[in-house]
Image (tube, rainbow, N blue to C red; front, top):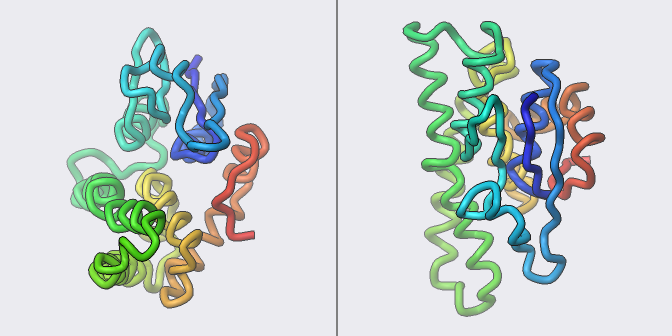
Length: 209
């Protein structure tokens, strides 16, 4: 049984979505952010030393980092679903999207989050952040032109990994200039597996509607 160590309002929500898409059995162990600091509780450090989420345990293994978890679950439990065949050209493109989500796309969004808390002190950094956000969101928007999902006609693990990028961009009001990206977020948030994950995961602040 896969155990998801689930922190509210975090990247672990997309792991619940993944497991619902694959119709896999799993158990949720819940952790709540401090209402003032928004930090994870110290109990998470008993699962992983960094005290971060998502983390899963499965068959005696502890796996952390969203991309590694998605890759692990799809390889070991996906039965060929949600990823192209390894070794194919499509797999190489898929793998790049998997790494891109956290390796590049989340950086300007995280900078926006922290700089916004500085008020006027962060103003000198804002033009560069705006430029980088437009660059990355435009890149994803163009990749989605004429297709429902990042790899084409079918949902894949890359969509699930990228989903948090689209959701956080929406929180910052950055989707209106990127119609393909906006429609993609609305599309995945309407999926029955996504909604089932919400029902199980609890309140989530990053919904479009």
